[in-house]
Image (cartoon, rainbow, N blue to C red; front, side):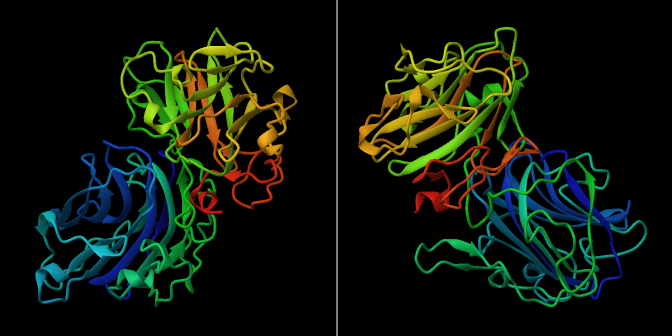
Amino acid sequence: MASTYLKRTNGTPTNDKIGTISVWFKRSKLGSDQRIHMNFADSSNYGYMKLHGDNYFHVVGVSSGSESTHVKTNRLFRDTNAWYHLVVAIDTTQATASDRTKFYINGVQETSLAQSDYPSQNLAHPLLIASGSNYHTVGSAENGTVSFDGSMSHFHKCDGTALAPTVFGSTDSTTGEWKINTSPSFTVGNTGYTILKDGNTITDQSSNSNDFTLGGGTLTKTEDCPSNVFPTINPLTYSTTKWNIINGNLKTNGLASGESAAWRSVYGTLGASSGKYYFEMKVTKTASDPNNFRVGIVDAEQMKYAGDNASFINESRGYGYQGTNGNVVNGGANTSYGNSYTANDIIGCAFDLDNHKIYFSKNGTWQNSGDPTSGATGTGSALNLATGYTYLPAVSHYYDDDRIEFNFGNGYFGTTAVASAGTNASGIGIFEYDVPTGYTALSTKGLNL
């Protein structure tokens, strides 16, 4: 979350010239500085790691009031659906300058650099030193005003050893993808720690007791993690940029600055062409006309990239359930279906891509006496789906005061946990209501069931 950061007072390091920081992160916002970690000794001595507003990654160190190191990538990091694994290994005792600061993304060293001002040999590195005010922050600058917007997992610091990324991850022999090592083994040193390892705990889970405190905001546990990626709202589509997207890209919070009321849609970052999936959408606020909402799925090829009138249900392969009258809509054609819905209602969407049916529930009750488990019979299904396409979750709404929140399986609407988690035979994801038998969350594990 953009307002959430962690903080702790540092101790005396085992070695202020050698150390390693490893973290998995999933970013939400682009185009603004996102500080991942900062070590603040005093106003003249500090170091930080961040994603720049231009989306490159860099490490900056200030010693005795002057910049002593600045290393940044040419490569840009703009994927808001992926988890990145970042390792920064520091050893200023090395004779070769380029060996003094190395950073790796998903196990691969970044060697194409836009700037490579390496620290001088044997410099006490600003990311590792301890003096003066002497504290660490995670997700923020020293005063808490510049924060990382997204999720983090498995934040490790090693004090005294420059470690390889293979301590914290490995290449999957089947997929060839970089995967997390959930129990890395390393000597932590005096100021080392492990946090955010099992859920959202900020108690040090290493052999030390270097616990963090919550500096600001709300820290929530997410099912979305490096080993099981869940969708969020895609911030890169044209229509989506017209909305203010917050809470890890899972909530719309009114129109973006300068935008006027019009139908616009938001889309999920994961889609599927086969299988059975379930997600939930909650209406959290409505304008004076309270029912300007449509929730459902759309063919990935028919997402609206331009034009203000971007309601996904106008597409031939867009299928939605609208709040105004409870009708279902496809290609602009309305069909009587269920009850209307408004603020605080939770809509469930079950889409069966094997039998090409879609169903909607309101507050746990399947509309039109629908039975998502009826297979090819399609008892009470809302619409028949065109075959051979990849479908994404979608929502359209209209006014600046309209608000919706997705639960793709994280178990939260915004920062509020579901009131009473329903049953879910797949064991993937946490939802307010029961997941129909045979369905699962739309996630990387769900896609591979």
